[in-house]
Amino acid sequence: MFDEDLVKLTKWLCSRGTTTVQFFEWADTDNSGSIDMVEFANALRAAKLQTFHRGKLRS
Image 1 (cartoon, rainbow, N blue to C red):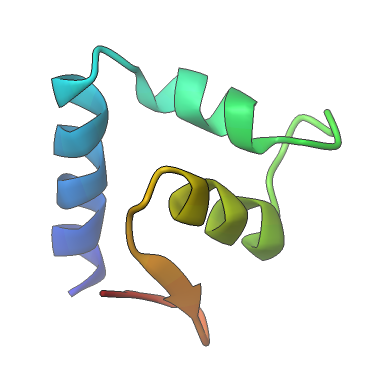
Image 2 (image 1 turned 90 degrees about the vertical axis):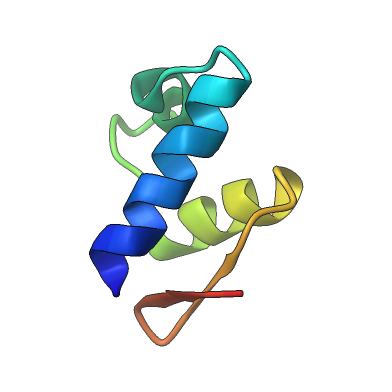
């Protein structure tokens, strides 16, 4: 199931001309060079995509 969600995210990014790297750099709000679950969930919410719940993506 996770692979399908990752494919959806990648397709969404491509449709907007954004790379995965750009998305993760944007999501890295504390500029640590990595993103945690909170940063990732916040980025998905801001992009109006799925949210993270208990380590899995959900609609």
